[in-house]
Structure formats: structure tokens, C-alpha cells
Amino acid sequence: MAAIGNKLYRQTSSRLEEAAAIDKQISRLEDDIRKLKIDFDIYFNGSTKRPPLEARARLEATIKRVSDNRNISYAQRYQLNALISRFTSYRELWRRTLRARGEELI
Image 1 (spheres, helix red, strand yellow):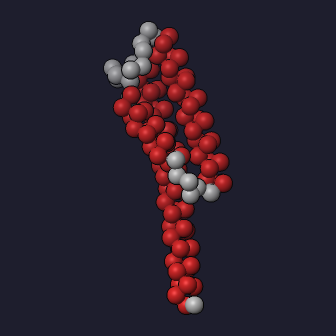
Image 2 (tube, rainbow, N blue to C red):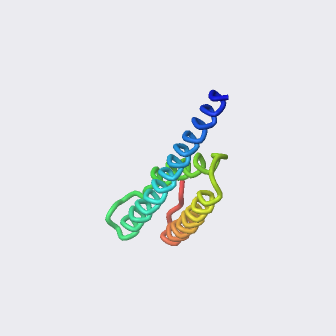
Image 3 (tube, rainbow, N blue to C red):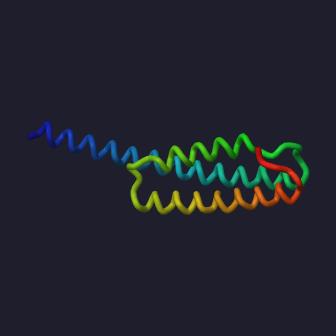
């Protein structure tokens, strides 16, 4: 019986560690979205010559990887969906702005 209890305890601590890791990923996503917005603002103001498309592609891949995780709690899923909707609205804004400037996304 003690082994079963021990195993259950280990699973609980690993779940807490996994939840903490997911929270870190979500906060990192939030920071990356903020940084990408700043990079696009710098590009649209004329300070850089190329749009940060590579950073956007990396961020999209990270969002897909985190959202495919099935062990996310409801609160974490809610926070993740809020971040995804913010990123989607930014992405549409950047697409429209690039189209208005006569540039196309690759």
C-alpha cells in the first residue's frame, strides 16, 4: 500500500511541476508576443528594412506546440486562448498594414 501511496504522491508532484512548466511557457509566450509587437512597430516606423517574419514564424510554432498540450488546466487554457486571440488580432493588423504598404507576406 505504501508503494501505491508513494506513486500517487510522485504523480501529484509531477503534475504540479508540469503545471508550473506550462505557466512558464504561457508567460514566455506573452513576453514573445509583446516583443514581436515592438519589432513590428519598429519596422513600420522605418527603423529596420525587413519585417520580423522569422520571429513571427517561431512564435506561431511555439503557440501551436503549447496549444497541442492536453494537460492544460481550464485556467491555463483560458489564458492561452486570450494570448492566441491577441496574437491573431496583431497578425491581421500587420497583414493589413503590409498590404497597404504594397508588401506581401511570404
